[in-house]
Length: 422
Image (cartoon, rainbow, N blue to C red; front, side):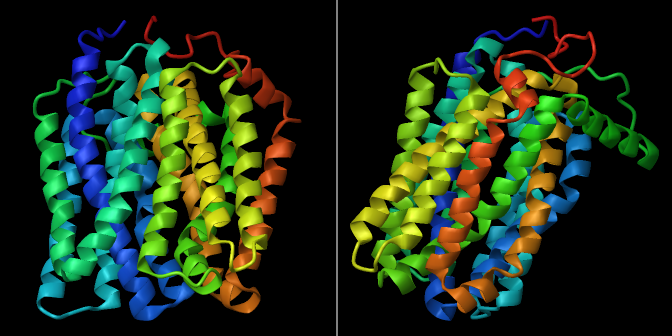
């Protein structure tokens, strides 16, 4: 059994650093969205920026997960944060020099996503090594709360910053947040799971490790179906997420502050959802909650597309509902993975999921600009939101998912599902 002493103090330090990093990143990301939306007013530009920010991480993610499971997870998080900050610095310098090149923006967003491919799985894989299993769902709720507060304050901060400063100055906020996040990790000890082989991995060993991650998923039928439904939902959600600013601008005739209000309302919803999960342990099964969130999220997005242009306040209210559903989904999904996957495989499984979910989404985003221009942004919300809701309905009919929801291990072997003797 891994010793998890003083885990609350460790999480306080981690959360302080992550909060500062998240709020600065949220402000900078939203400032970039505002700049791209106003300067170019193009669905294709927003779609390509989203692809640049996701595709590299999706491609290298599975291989990154293999190394995350072999490397020191704390050092991996610190180096990944530092690399992302360096990429942001390059973008800031380019704006200072007057080189406002879309190609450079896409390139730096792509390199930032490489850093994220290592940071996110390392962070999620480190959590079960610090905290008791009984607290994982509550911790996921607190993480969602922190992200939600960042989602509320970040857009307002970003809109204010880009109104007062040039975009090059705004980017410096992200660097400051990364410095604080890296500094907080210096004071935290994160244990690493023991693995059978610590030697430098050859290509053959990396490939074998990657196959081990696939087997961990495929041998657990409930987990396999959970991945499948989540991948399809992500395929539908990402184009909508990219087009939220254009729906506000073009359909509801808003501006900078209306865009920031919608982002803030999404954050309010996530704050409520994350707070509920963090304070109370739901009586319903986690997979059952995931299925319900698909229906709620999809319905809120579809109705948003049906709304007439003069109902911006209703749109904002529906965005809060969608944020609540997204927070509950994220907390439950991450907790299911942390409970079902063995610690020594967790890094590659998180990375595999990210790649499995994102690569098809990137292909879908290639047609997002065309579809938005051809049928209208609001109709895209209606179609994709309805599909998400129907996936939620269909997921109730999956027997392996119901078994997973009941807390039964469906990996098909006799080993402990966590493999750490807890």
